[in-house]
Image (cartoon, rainbow, N blue to C red):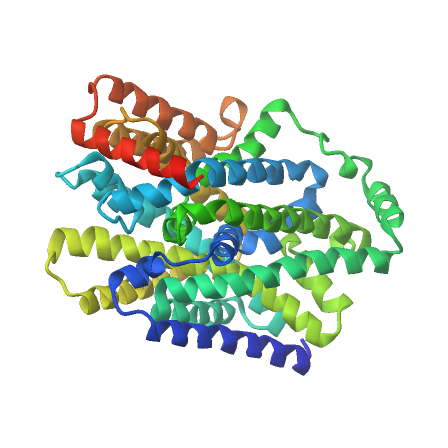
Length: 489
């Protein structure tokens, strides 16, 4: 990396920390720290949701998968696009209204407890435990991605790179909470979008045009161009099942809860989906054109194809910006995951189980210390340089999608979902993912989110049918939310 590239990169990092310091001055209570006071505009909410969703796997994992295996990997993007659209369409507006109506719930466990009037607090505690377990894996994936970036760009050891990246991310999340996370995500989302448009276009021009790109790729492997190459029906379903994960991701759902009003959701949906489609297919084409420009044998780690193209094809200033986009993708997801995990510890454990009379400043500082503790655990898990970004993401994504996805959908659309049904569904979904991930080959060679999602939903519905009708209080609240949503559409 040249000194010019390094300076550009450092300026970006300083800018992100400055946002964290500014947000620190606007964070005075727990609601500000966790949800930013529910005042996100549609543009910030949309890009923040997209950037926190995509993470380092968008610029490292997905291009690397296409670079290594070919266009048969596009089914992940197809499934994610459908899932994200349905999440914006069915969940966003309803969740924004319901979380405020249900005792102004600040977290997903908080909402579930209030939605079902669970006085035992068991639903809250189990939900928070699931969040902490799977977010530790998810955060670890981001730490690996950040370490790979610093390792490749600054000629650092993996361990040193891991700590440098982690310190930057922890700093502004520790200071500014949700506002810092959302505002930096907005900037990072724009940067990621521009990078994923620029890299494939410039590479295509450098190779000699699209026809030359396809000729080079076909010459390497004729099956590389075929989306159905070596794919079975089960394999395609398994890749597209990634889309089911959207309904249960706490860091994405938090953006829906924080948007200014349900009336802003349609505009946010258009912005968010436009950003997502172009970014996803930019990542796919980055991996694809990389085959035409680079020899796969010359790339030791396929997940570094974006880094290599950015370094060799662009002016040092632009290269620094593009490399900053990778860090942006990593940071925008890790900060969200750290914040949701911190919220689970602060709101769902510390306040509810130990210090119900804790003051706002005390809770904010507990949240900040929780960010530090979770990050240190994730760093320890990421200490193995052989860890794959995509593998870690897929496990955590499946865990959240299977444990919470059906419960969120049913709680917003089915009045009869009971507390016991929700609790049983969460446990069955999470356990299924853990068990299924240990099985491989034959009947079990399918992404664990699919069986986990189905079993969670069936369990929740089955248990709820035996519980009888909801209480009048729950029915009245459900009807109120439905009426408000109809007015907001």
